[in-house]
Length: 194
Image (cartoon, rainbow, N blue to C red; front, side, top):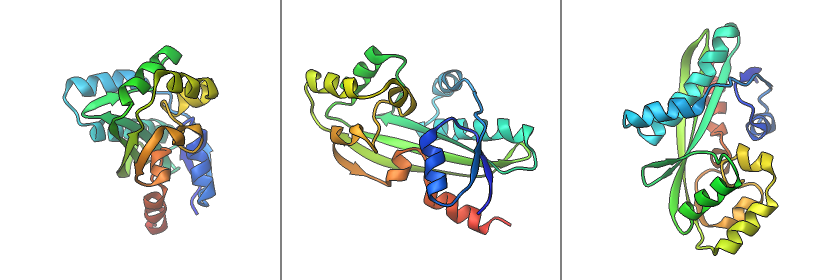
């Protein structure tokens, strides 16, 4: 399959691609996601639009520098009843986020954008619904104590392929999407790319 550039630092996204036979080189875009999110939130953008825009910005930025390559950008957003939940800045912040999600159903939206010569040539978004169990504060702290800083800051507040699975009573959606990359649709697109 195609060799592509992944405009992301995410080890999990790289693993998903490689597990599915998509060879990739990693070149992080290093865009300031918070500035973009805040601007889009002020414009009343939907969570899906925020996720798509961030994926596109990442892909286009790297695609401008490597114009002959296919570049993939991806982003995931947690949507709790219309409120965007961003990655935690520290463990205190992570605890507050878990308290907010506690006992609630939220949507996780993962978007992907493929760009060439600085322009988007394809994008796709997919949604999963996750219902978190009602948990006591001590259970939430115990969970956070088991999570490394890298996992905590890289995968939002939960790592569904690891310890995070036990936080949920119900998960509806594709696991690769929840981990940040709707890979089936990417494979279908790349297969038809001439």
